[in-house]
Image 1: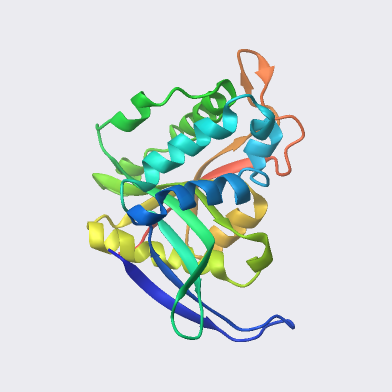
Image 2: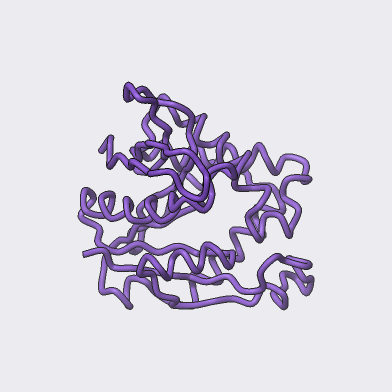
Length: 233
């Protein structure tokens, strides 16, 4: 699994044409992918920004370690600009992926000491995902799970996020894992997922969500996070 597709985009809304490739994140780019998520995902993602993960002592480094371990599993996707000669330019999008298997724990998580706020974020995700069993709903033994999709701000609203979700079909095909599921946390990402054929199987109102009696996400940008899934084939 290396190159997934090339996209040639014509000028739109006064913006110049671009060509980019979507490929699997392989070893030379593990750290770059983790850094990309730190710089582009954390500041704007709904629950990370609401809980203040960026300002937590150790929060950024814990997230970096986590993402590096996930991309090292070899199925995450990234989009890179290409120049006119086909040379690779900068990363403009990243989607961190892994395969979840029925009755199988992720051993790599046991080696990471999560920060307090990241623990709460993962607890939120787990409780949301527990509301609907993907294995039962889709009659599957495994599914492709995502831990964040981000597009660099300068390249937003050019359809790159949709192309990344479409490219996930190839990952599913090569892994013979037809189902994918993700918790989408913002209004834009939820609309994008719906346009790409994802259905909502569970949701959580984070404005009233509490851990140990305390509201976790004060003043989120969007009140509801959604556990969404799609069968690609």
